[in-house]
Amino acid sequence: MRITIFGSGYVGLVTGACLADVGHDVVCADVDEQKVARLQAGDVPIFEPGLENLVRQNQKAGRLTFTTDIAEAVSFGILQFIAVGTPSDEDGSADLRHVLEVAKSIGRHMTEYRIIVDKSTVPVGTASKVGRAVAAELDERGVALEFDVCSNPEFLKEGAAIEDFSRGSRIVVGTDSERVKFAMRECYGPYNRQQEKLMFMSVRSAELTKYAANAMLATKISFINEIANLAERLGADVEEVRRGIGSDPRIGYHFIYPGCGYGGSCFPKDVKALAHTAKQAGYPAEMIHAVERINARQKSKLFEKLCLAFDGKLAGKTIALWGLSFKPDTDDMREAPSRELMEALWQAGARVQAYDPEASDECRRLYGNRDDLMLAERREEVLEGAHALVVCTEWKAFRTIDFERLRDTLLAPVLIDGRNLYQPDTVKAAGLGYYAIGRGDSI
Ligand code: NAD
Image 1 (tube, rainbow, N blue to C red):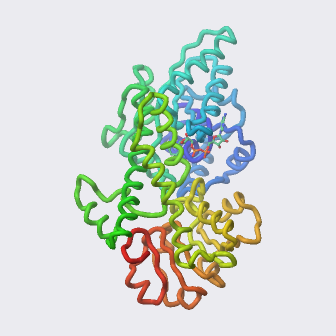
Image 2: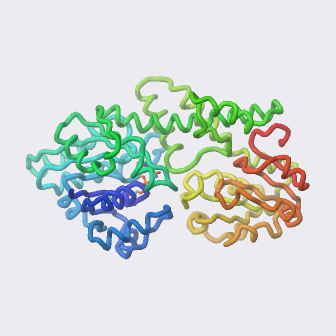
Image 3: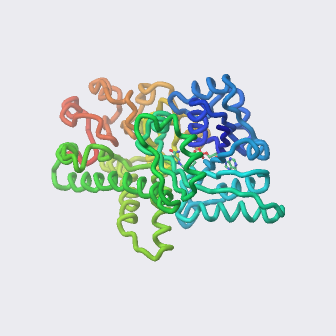
């Protein structure tokens, strides 16, 4: 099948590479000339396990190409995927500027039937807006061409994107057109062989499904963080509570890990966008607002714990940070808890020495060269001359530490564990001040 994908970010690039890998011919179009030039040279600008290989192999096989030529992209695929960003607008709603820009381009250049596939996360009603944008362009050109718009939200997670795309639990498609169903079956056929994963539903249900999924996951995180905060006050250990509730199959272990709040490009903006949608619909979505408030509070926890450990005297202190990305196996720092912590530390007059296996370049891009930030190549380097270590991201490489050595290296010595990676007894026995999330007397 000939497929066009607009947007070569995490979602567009993974979708393009995976669909090419199962034999489709794919053109990925992006407006970012630099990005496209790098991709054309086989250089993948983001870190995502396995992606660079997949892109190169399929480029070599001639099934995957990159372009900035929008007219060429529109004329290429019968399926026109929209996988561009939908960031938060000032009022929390999803900014549809890029999505509608692509829709207009399709209307401006199409010369035969096209199926437009909304893969970006977009609010209920967007498929109709996309349809109107395409139709307006066709009207302006004075041509009558048939097209369909369907919703096909993406559920991949960064860090495991290829695996999720290829072996995800479901493929949601919102459409009432038989022609679209047929085409989407053909597109996703290779992923639908062992069991029926395609779920056809109405366009509006598909659009809401994506927000409901992310809001549910964010709710689980905020819920356990609420319990963690309570556990701190009650002298209980939330890790014991987590095991106690996760063992109930009705609850399960997924997404109930307490920590320093959720970040990334999706949960924060999607929870906000859902709250905005609810407001527009005249419905007071109280739980959604609470999820957001709890998370905002949780993101300040690491700084609060440092204040506690140092009696509020952070000016002139050097703090070591392990983990900058919002979660392991990605270099994405959008809304990462590490950012809130670093910015608060700088505000308080402290220095930061940070290590992340993949996100140092991204951190440099975001904050530039500053005297109060040192980025290191090895995790041990950031400990030299630091008063405390804060673990922000649960990269595998942080799971084991020589606590005695850490105690001897740190000036204070204090360990703030934002992901509950260590055993309180072991850390304390080594003579370190230990502050975790929701672990009873650790506060
Ligand atoms: P991204 O910011 O990584 O990439 C978006 C790309 O779109 C950029 O390369 C940008 O240059 C390009 N673009 C912007 N306007 C364009 C235009 N008019 N024509 C062509 N390209 C254009 O975004 P992302 O993380 O891939 O997310 C894309 C969408 O998928 C969002 O709606 C997001 O919510 C959703 N989503 C993201 C994830 C995730 O984990 N990142 C998961 C599921 C769904």
